[in-house]
Length: 107
Image (cartoon, rainbow, N blue to C red; front, side, top):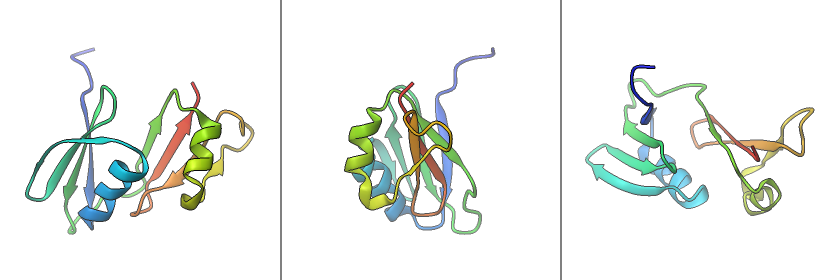
């Protein structure tokens, strides 16, 4: 390995709904911001949301591990969580405002 992974970037068509989703719904903390971008702390791995309406990220999948799945699925019910097929007790996924998959698993 040539270092450690520290940042994931998602280019956003509409930045504010994405920031609200990751900050308010999923509980990430904004650690830096400047015009057109926000950096959120994902618990040891940062997420950069950057305004790029000309080329938004499509079909990204972000996975959160160590989730209390039963509590999270109840608290995120308004987001329409879908259990993982064949591994229903292990986790579920929802979509962010731009259609990217966010998966929460218990291990």
